[in-house]
Length: 486
Ligand code: NAP
Ligand code: MG
Image (tube, rainbow, N blue to C red):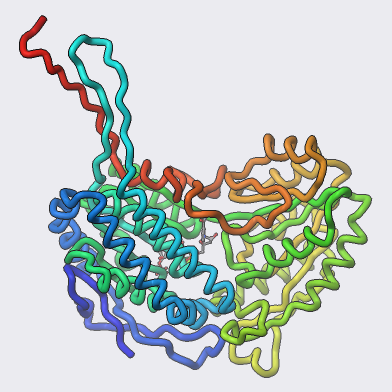
């Protein structure tokens, strides 16, 4: 099946007349579809269409814009099974992880629709007599939304919905390896009655269309999620052109397990955090720091629990962990496993690519655990983005927090303890934007801000009321209503 771009209210072919194939990572030979290999001209067309549609959309009352979002959320709800299957087929996660992602996308769309009746400014007393002073919000203009492959629906949803409700028009560039879910999401907005040019979709390679989206003077803001390498370039180029830019980047998220913790609960959550979605989450748990006195017991119970994980094609409901998303992810994860062993960490579980039926058809790696990990090792510092967990020992909570903080990233973290003093010591000193106590590092609720410290994020937080802050200009208004100068 051949899929098209959506520009100016129509499904259209790329100017290149070329398409590219996307394959199912659980069945390397199976083609999911052919997608438009977009060019800079397509990107320019999409930006022009969004610019042309801007005035009409910005002048549409926000509750009317919101009504379209509510309808889009309704269409997503009706098509949720199909959307979840499309996520599994192009990304490789399990069907239950995919269903949770669809739920999150619907929640984000509904929440943003609700903002259509809020988007508050405020009034204050003025220093001058007869002066009314207040603030209000205006849209930014055309916004570029550039997203990664690991959440092909939820990340686009939580960027696009607030951008639209705030009155911006959008050019959406999904990851080149997950365009099917993006096309389906676009269809949901089309069914919901999104006006021509307000939301435009272009598929294909970021290196081909990226420059136009980042450089065009008509694009006023960029919302990006992806790697540090690309994100820092977009941030720099965007800043040079004085655009508003937000970048959500990587993570190297730590969980602290103190001796007094409910170990059963900690292990269940750590297994979900490390191996859920095959570890390909920015909020995945990749480090565990365990208080010395319970370290050995923790490791043996963690290994026993990890041994029960069922790996396979995510579409099968009996599976706990799916395939990696691509050949390059597969190579990267195996390279890091090799580096861990070389640097002297102890391979306590897994560590190999899986083979035989059905594994030869996909990019399967065992859930993997390293112990005796030193903080300076590469597997302790770099984002692996796969099912690899590293375990450290700490003598007390201070040392545990210090190991947790000793990375360039600062997205998410967690502590397991029932001691209020330790919990608050952690909450107040850990260097992450998302902080959990007795809960996994994963996820986030759509009505709360999402983002990290240090190299994990730059620019405004996403979601919650922070999204409206990013996607609007605040205008400060002074009105003197005295008929004459007093
Ligand atoms: P990526 O390689 O940086 O790609 C992200 C997006 O940027 C893709 O759509 C990509 O298109 C596009 N792109 C590539 N080159 C570009 C250019 N020159 N100009 C403009 N856009 C360009 O990231 P990824 O490999 O898809 O995703 C994995 C990364 O995302 C991980 O580091 C992960 O931690 C991070 N992530 C962060 C969060 C968070 O919220 N903090 C959430 C999820 C993922 P192509 O696909 O065509 O290359
Ligand atoms: Mg990439």
